[in-house]
Length: 481
Image (cartoon, rainbow, N blue to C red; front, side, top):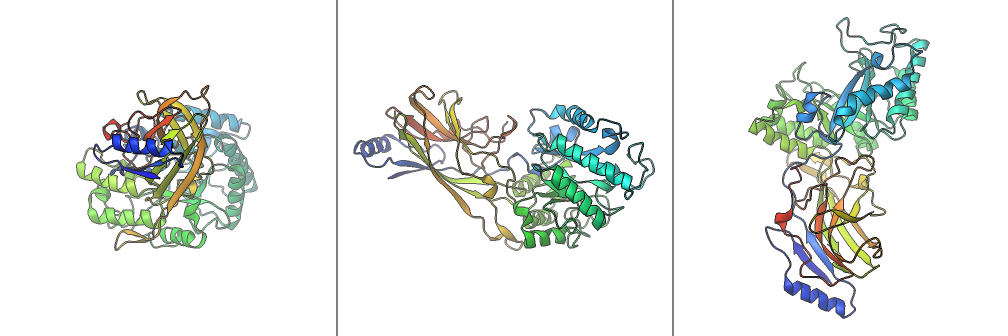
């Protein structure tokens, strides 16, 4: 037996449905389920581990969507000579530089580098290493020591999102010089061993092919690189042959300072986002390559309406976007009974969510919205909620559409000592299990502050008082915090 409810405007279930449900329950039938169709939130969301990604600095706190920040780190800021306590230095440096991000929901993508560019004086080698020496046994020993220390400090650090390999070449971009096959094996093996928890990303998709690494492409959608195997076409091949995007992030930055960048992606971030041709091309590359986040383009002017409107479109394309299409629940549960829940969710974004975060079922106080009881829903892995694939630029959709993922389970409710009898708001949440900061938000209108998605009212151990839904005007704006 089902009662269908759709959240629209101010519609809500009334007395007739309550009486009908009570009659069904009193005759001993299987408990009826209230079925809710949440309305999709139309705008972009500030969600963890995706979107516009500024570099460390003032733009992080000012960015509307930022939950990621890349941090360039000079090697000699971590180590001046071999006798230094490298692990202690890295931890002290990280704590000092990242302290101001506490409570912001922003995670770091660090990249260590040695040489900034061709200009003399922009080298940052430890004092007891020879600048420019990428091949000697001494350098390789120190390189392995550094990577091991980075892993000890960052692999379990909840402030770190994932790690860009860096180190070699200008800006740590693996050119000038390129890592040869021997260096690729050395680096790949060392990073693979050091980082068991954090994703490692490399600069070129045609390198490190024997390792399971993601990619950072630092000239995203550039006119001269989009169709080259070292860059855009290489990411496409890696995704097509190994499905790399399904398990590892694809990210990077746009580039507005070399070659024919004015052809694509445009003159500057504002041009990319406000010009329909540039914006469509940029979104097509995000969709096609399953991109999660990008920098430089994050430096757009948020005060210009046309630019901000374009940023909304691009933010919706980045990474994952979980739309809760349907939610069903038992509206009346006896004391020590089971709460039946069913949900259907679709990822309308471009990439998965790569972390194993829990989906929690919460019972909230109807007035204060305070959590009274909460439990993780077992056997739900949101990393498997994949988007579509094979982007069709002509019609703007995936040829292989996103699947709808279903959960159907019962959750036992505790006795009176842990959960007093009464009526509660049933809500879903996907919190960060390591930091009590920004949780993952479904793209639906049903939202309470604190990253809760309220979906109905359950009567636990009592008779219902009149309705099983929430008034839409009680919802907050998911982008309001």
